[in-house]
Image 1 (cartoon, each protein chain N blue to C red):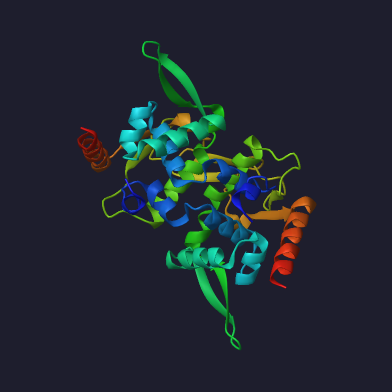
Image 2 (image 1 turned 120 degrees about the vertical axis):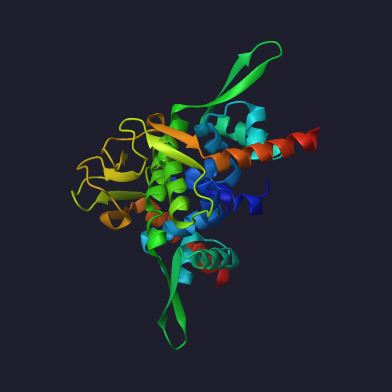
Amino acid sequence: MRWNEIDDSLCGLARTLGVIGDRWTMLVLRECFLGTRRYDEFQLNLGAAPHLVAARLKKLVEHKVLEKRRYQDHPPRYEYRLSERGHELYPAFIALIGWGEKWLKSPQGPATIRTHKGCNHRLHIVPTCAACGEAVTARDVKATMTPRFAAERAKRLAAARKATA
Amino acid sequence: MRWNEIDDSLCGLARTLGVIGDRWTMLVLRECFLGTRRYDEFQLNLGAAPHLVAARLKKLVEHKVLEKRRYQDHPPRYEYRLSERGHELYPAFIALIGWGEKWLKSPQGPATIRTHKGCNHRLHIVPTCAACGEAVTARDVKATMTPRFAAERAKRLAAARKATA
């Protein structure tokens, strides 16, 4: 399977990765959540080549994760802000960071300290079920493939078997 | 900044992405969460070239996200299972999928239906604060850079300015 096929896949993960499944893109998003808005700030904070940053910002605007707004007229200058869609990437983002901080500890400590504004405690996120409020781990979830997804996999399997026959 | 520098960065996100920030790796993990364990099943379910799958499995074992276990002696055969570290990627994984299902809807519907075993409702995850139990969004979090991370960024900024001077 190639990536242009994956983007069209029924799998929500594959579609998400088609938009943000690139390490520089994720770091651009980190900057957005840290408050970075302007092109040159993204570039300098990431220490990345200009074309790398420009391509990521452009793609994120195309996919409506970021909104490009003019903040100065002469000369025209633009800033990039998270859309509602972009803001909603926060749970994924914070989960990825939290995992790295726990399992791939830096000997020099964390990069940022996150605090929950509501209660002023150091932030630790617990994924909970919207229906019953209980904490949820992988072991608490039953995943059932829909008939279409099962058929998509079966088709791929048949094609793979045919190719190796 | 290059990726070998990013891996060493203080940023937990950058370190996480150094291990799993690759789209095929994430799809291998999706398979793990769906119950796939054996090498040929990974390859067939993903429809990916054998060397792509083998390289991802090897890396995930090296980083202790997966455990390789012998399940047959003659001939020797191995399966790959999520370690505790791997299981703890679930919140990130489910958040990425959920975002794709909401914002990048497939006209053919979702790939899997997830149910919370505890209450039997369709799974919707709410990130909550471990200290106070309230739901948390990006707007509820204050992130403060640690002095070291701020210094790392300042150093990178100075290097970038010098390079373009």
